[in-house]
Length: 456
Image (tube, rainbow, N blue to C red; front, side, top):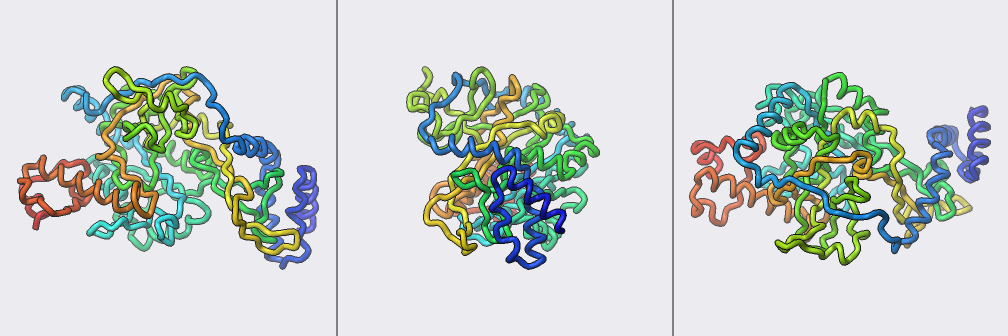
């Protein structure tokens, strides 16, 4: 261990990070080993370049870069019956051939919701008591059953919640999914930096690490072997989504078919913004290439601009629902896309090694965003959908994008399914009926007998 210490001490010092070993001699043998292992994993050359991003983040009023123009989108509701059926058949064909995989970003915790544990384990308050993970597993099981083969499910966790996530799946019997068809892997992490570019110690023997963002998903998938597993299975399209969407239509055959028909490396679903100031990134073209512009960067005049029909010119909200061609993921797994810095309150230690809980932001975390892969291609397939059918994010404890709003969206959707199946409105009045994803994925299969069993 002395040899390792000497090597890492010299390396850290050469990058001005010698403080990482300041308390080394006071540590137990296990703590010494723990700290050296952490330091050994750090790419100091890469970290040296991150301080620039921190300086950029300190300038919140920076002007947007590049020329912004609208992007073309297909309206999911505007397809003719024959065209829609063609896309759906194409999607089911790929699903039956095993060429579609599902990829969920599930590294977050439910602390903002008052939930102790991974966000995917959260119960939004449905009568069934099902967690977000269970709702998604059952939708995948439904599609897998109808396709005649399982859809491999890639679950990207974080170091903070990997163990709990895997244990939750194990204790739930994987929700009926075959264990070998679920691939768990960790998201990459990066050290936090103080304003001087020094790596933050959260304890004498521990470096403050934070997930490196969903934009590192391809790299994490490659390093974990998830990409190799996709290649082994013959997966050609990967359905990517966030775990907190309670209405997510995973591996939607229509979307898969549209993506495969146009065959651009990336397809994405968007929804019209509810109002100009809605806090959601917009999908557009920047310097002629697909891009997402964060709402904080959109100039006021663009934010409120409307076309001759009164619709927002820049109103296509990013939902983080994408289909990536697997060969694109392979090709760009190591792509050097930009990092974004966020000023945060991060637990640290003072010069004496005593713990410090900051009252205001004291350091920077660094993330890559999945949409920063968009400008790497010239064209992408954009599908404009109805958010009330597919998008119910659970981010806040109360109010907008909360468990209550997600439940209401789900109940309203299921009510429409029952009405379309012929159930009289008076039988649904004042009732909130939950339809299991095992019974119906998108409103299909609601025969009179099924409806009667649901109505009780």
